[in-house]
Image (tube, rainbow, N blue to C red):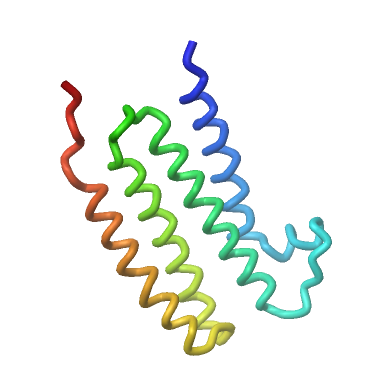
Length: 128
């Protein structure tokens, strides 16, 4: 019995759940970890961590059934990471949390999302 796909499913469910909760409820989660919440910035950092977990969970989920050598699902996972990261960065910019560097981050994240999404839309490789 191959446990690899089952491990990827378990990992994906864990990371997707944790990532979503960090994105939606950072101020309820951080105190449980002993992190003080002096300002809105701590919530933004938690949401960025959540997007990383969520994206990694997507990578695990999408690669669970991929044959070795197929990178299409990996690109789709990275696209999910960069899309969710872009949304959080944009929300932080709108809230006035980030300065000019937030726009730089957004200017990097959006093209990376587009490149990975485009690579993930290609025709799936066929094994011989």
